[in-house]
Image (cartoon, rainbow, N blue to C red; front, side, top):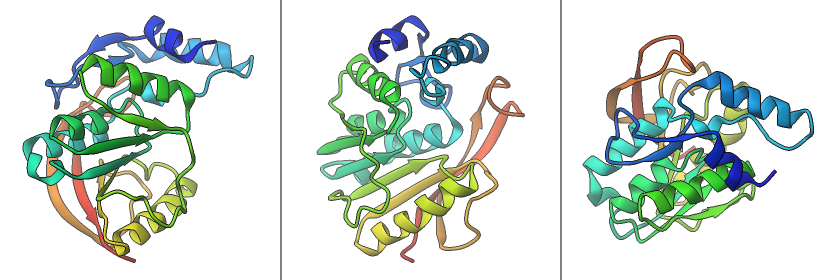
Amino acid sequence: MDPAIFVRRNTAVERPPLVPEIRLHLASEVTPIWQATEDSLARGAVPPPFWAFAWAGGQALARYLLDRPEIAAGRSMLDFGSGSGLVAIAAAKAGARTVLAAEIDPFAAAAITANAALNDVVVAVTTADLIDAADSNCDIVTAGDVCYERETAERVVPWLRALAGNGCLVLLADPGRAYLPAGGLAERARYLVPTSREIEDRDARETVVWQVLPG
């Protein structure tokens, strides 16, 4: 199945509640798109559609960058685990010199490309697994909502700390996931992000934008 076709057929153009300036191809309901991916998963074609939702961490990071454009303006940025591309698009709108969205799911990569075009910004996309790369070659690295599983957090957080040690500004947004590290973080901003009961257990999640400190 062509990823770009799948994205168009299974989403609608919507605006995330905390970031109405940006339009995205999103799933209006979780069940139909999840069923579509499960049907295709049985044929080995489509990963779970995490890219089809504007998660709280991404919304908080996007809001933070749009409200403080001086952070991204003129700088190079990497958005890790980009999903829908929301944060990458916000960085481009804030005037980042270059924006690279990293997402290993090819369907997410297709969604990022479609969403960047929808918002008239330029975002490069890579499907390479960048974790453990010694140098991001970027001034800023962002990661939204990546501490939801122990295995993922144990891989990503040390890598982010290493990037911070190499001089990157590393921003991690988290809505209280179980595997957020207890230390080594400095709070930058805090938002109450409206969420959907389709993907969360409540109507809003308090979400913090943290600066990751060097390890």
